[in-house]
Amino acid sequence: MGNIATTFNEQIALLEKRGMTIDLEPNKAKEILLDIGYYRLGFYWHPFVIDDNHNLLSGIKFSDIINLYYLDVDLRNVITKYLNRIEINFRTKLVYYVSNKYKTSPTWFIDPKIVDQNFIKDIEKYYSDDFKKSNKPIKKHHQKYLNDKYAPAWKTLEFFTFGVILKIFRNLHDNDIKERITNIYGVKNLAKFISLMETLVLLRNTCAHGGVLFDLKVPKGISKIPELEFNNNDRMSLDSSIKVILFFLNKISTDREKDLENSINQLFEKYRNDGFVKRIIENEINYMYK
Image (tube, rainbow, N blue to C red; front, top):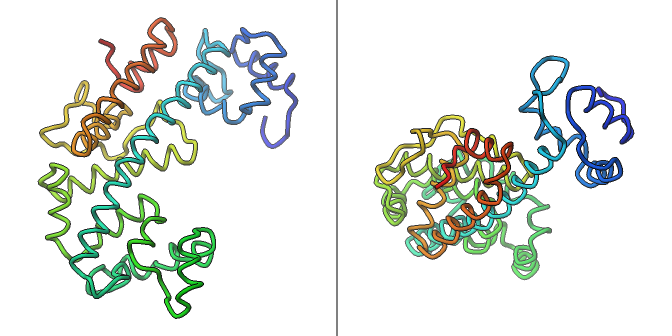
């Protein structure tokens, strides 16, 4: 297709030429292409491209790709809900313990005695004019306190991303607070705790930006801790990343841990009789059906 826009009919003809079976009514296929888009759906058939001419693995059907797409959408919705719970819990602990230990420094996230310069030097990237305008409580704070360059940590950190929160944690000088928080989550090794959290941030960013989940791989592999066991010792797959979410949820709320486990099992159960998607779930996601 290159850099030239194409019509639905041209898109369908090209897919057929490359070996995909269009097993839906033409109008339905066009409706889906207008709804989701050829380019986005391409993320889901790309893993089945077999040569430089973009030909596809034999037997791939249009409905297979649509089912795989909606599996990914449902996974993203489920995972995002529980990642959000962990993110809020982690942020709350960080703000609470640091703010109460350093009461005379309400903007401790830019205090070089508390946080390393590696973070502080980049603060304008996070605490920008747009940040102040787009987050109502921050905007109101600056309207009320005209001389404040920054709002207090308990306001500011509510609007920083998971990744930025983890960066602040990593750059804290106070190892006692870092160890206290890691121990709350049942991790004894600080470096492994940060690595596990980085896995969650990767997942969070993938979900937030509409990235593909089913073939997601953790580049460096997930850190080993005694409480985490992975199918086939695979430390890179989505299933292994979900186990990291379950591990942290267990320390926050066992009810939420069970909710996530049930939600994932129910979602994958829907595809038990779908040969194509089931193979993806087992071989790419690395989930094991019971």
